[in-house]
Image 1 (spheres, rainbow over the protein chains, first blue to last red):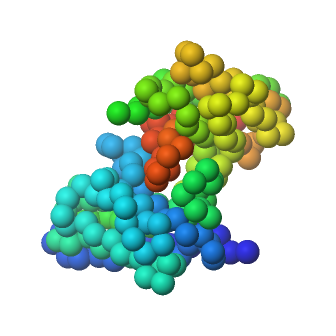
Image 2: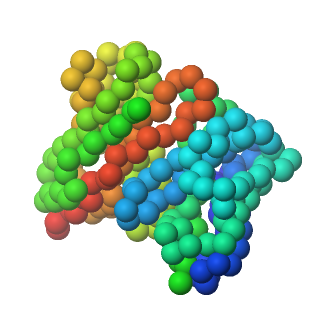
Length: 114
Length: 115
């Protein structure tokens, strides 16, 4: 079946603009994760969804970052008032559930804030 | 807090030879998982191998095997018969068993395969 997909593949935006990044998990996967990969910070966890709820938002770096998941499927990561330090690759992963299951990653969205 | 350290930013190996990538981690948990992920230029993270901490036997997947030393908190990846397609960034990662299995990643090792 299809893997995890993310859109857009690349996004260039101006400082101060809002951006939305989308993740389509593997069908039937109930757990969904967002990670950020940047030169300075490496790979870091942002947020985890189990179904539509987010029991762990501990990795969101500021209140400019938010995420939602609807219908237990698609998730959107929103960054408001983007800053240059938000430039990174944003990776999404899904797993069948959160317990003892391997996470499968999408190809990521490369965000560049000018 | 859990941390994962990969001390080799870059490694290179001749095609068909064997290479070992190092990883150490720090945790106070007794049950957890360890992973090696591969990230080629396409950016997509691909699972290479997974090890459950409660299993003493080292995991193996074809040409990929690990040397898991729980007491030393060491988890190295051995790639045998290296192939050009193995060239990528390799990340070691850790996850606890309970709750959200958010992955904690090392800084990565860039592996180059020389023909």
